[in-house]
Image (cartoon, rainbow, N blue to C red; front, side, top):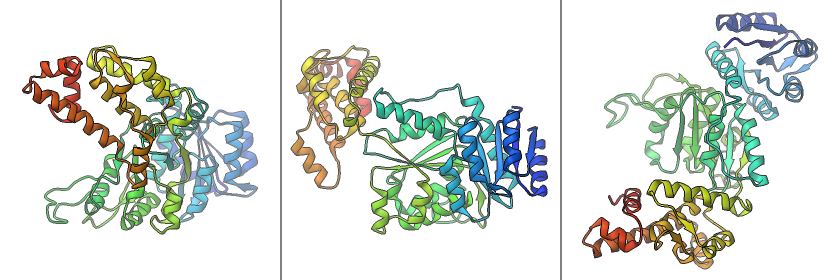
Length: 437
């Protein structure tokens, strides 16, 4: 797309380099040598991007970032910082800068930055996945996501298990300039420690026993897009060092490779643990925490979202009715029980409760006993043990009920569905989900 870019730098050589680079991308530009000239141009012309040096004769780049945020919020601003000055770059991102590039300017990185920034205009009217809810917290969260999508700053998404942190990360990706590139989620706690480096950075054929071919890592798969590091607190310390370097240098070294490869990914991370406390305990590197936590986004627990639970109940029951070709309703007592329940497992727990209730209910009306809500005491015991096994516990109950019905009917699915009081299609759906088909 044809777009106009404002270049702000007091060094003529840098202005010329940036102007020529943009010309070769068919992007017209205007240049300013200081803040005053930049403000005059901003008031008299329309721009789609601003590139500014941090050091200017009459101020600094942060002042320009703040000025544009207040007066021209649709213009993304990228700052040019001295090499290795990460504190300045992070401060710029916190102030609202779209991204940063370091001197000496790497032209490939600059082209990628400009391309991403200019895609923002095309994304403004498009929507993707969204969080269900109309509570004050969720409305505020959606507005914040919209703002963060316009930046390339690393975002740390905090919140309890089951609150929808991956959905939030996906929304940031889908509403931003990288939406047409991959969104790659990875659960850092689900990969064995000895395989983490290879999984994240890839490896070269012959680099270790079993490496029969070259393999791309998740950073390469996400190149140009977004890498979502879920449960980042589970990364061992030696991998935290490698991740920090990859983020700071925008480059990775596959296992067995002789040199680093440039990489262009936006990093989003999340965990249900308290990373700040882990830093104090020496379990998580402070420099990595500082780098991924440029902006923290808290996702509220379901118990603090008021009537959102009613909207979520209707949403999940509609989905279950469509997938099982049957319409399910909640009895008044069942609905009241859900409204009064605290949902320690949050949205994921609500979804599992309703899925299980659909399987176990007699007919199409879900009664309170079909919900099988755990007693507070049993949950507290699980929580006190340091591990929340609620989801696995509920799934095991459902599995036992279905297997019992199948055994009683000698594995006749039609008869088992009748015994369970559900449709054949609903039983088939549950068998596939539980891996019993």
